Length: 171
Image (tube, helix red, strand yellow):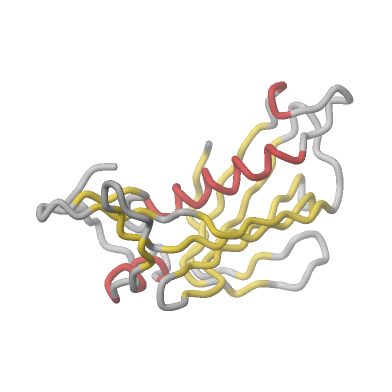
């Protein structure tokens, strides 16, 4: 994937309403053969992998990890609780897609991301991912926990506001 800073820019998807996201980025993905169906059109499932990949890229750009291990032994992650994608037009093998992802909303325990996929400025798809910050304990159910203020600040910062940061743990 190629990455390009998008900051707090408005993102429009081929005539769709503009979005003023906080903490957004733009990345590019070439449609590979494995991403297509027998007709050479992108299979619907590929968009879900690309949304997850873009989400992880946005988190890394904010100095965050999808999986955190803390010195006290606690472990946190961001399981998805809702994912959707609406398709606007076909993309085909070899096409380069621009993928815009941004933070649409942050709740007490959840982050909602929105994605826009474009090919040469033409809207291809729009997606939404809701992830919940959870504490993970061996042998226990995942426990939703509040998102710390520093993580909210990192997720909603524009690229210009982000400072280099080394998280305490490695994912």
